Length: 259
Image 1 (cartoon, rainbow, N blue to C red):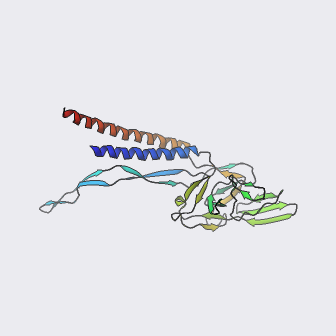
Image 2 (cartoon, rainbow, N blue to C red; image 1 turned 90 degrees about the horizontal axis):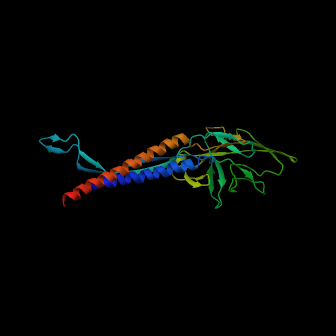
Image 3 (tube, one colour; image 1 turned 135 degrees about the vertical axis):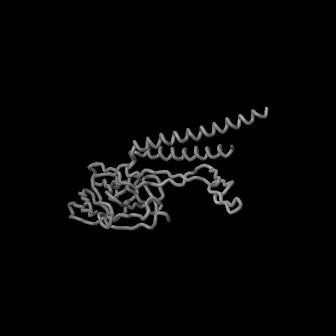
């Protein structure tokens, strides 16, 4: 009887984490370059009072055993790196990635971060930076004041100013397992042992995505899908709480029998 209480409790805890994940997806529905998270569950260890295939004597084997589960747990929450919709902003330094890849930025501690958020600006020194002021790497050079910036889909950047024309090419980074990247907040990720080492290449080549100037990539969160998942999580939570209530009523009936 007590096992049902604990099993249902693990189910409620797992659904609470599921709800937290869905809420975070919905909260970031307008976050540029955001990738939704999905949650995955596993069942817990089983108690086995009688094992399948046990010998009952005379060479007879039990065809099925007795297994009692101990509930569920959250196995992982992983990012889903599907393409978000591209939105036209008209800003010359706004860059969207159409396809696979990340931009490299230098974090405040000197390490490298990776982002799909292409809302870039110029700082006082002519560096292209993120909304948090982190310098964009990926081969992007300093932009002189008054320069006209043109970025092609293959990452070729042309800077035209009164002093002449300058050209260079951007690079992109990708990972064998992008779901293994660690989320840092601020639309940034960092490399982990699970993600694999970064691979650098040119936009539009060898499977890397294209750069689209004047656009940003919106969140890949589907509001309708998340609302459906929210209802499912709520109902699963209610069912588990009902299991606890039922177990409590049965224990109460047993206690009343002793009076």
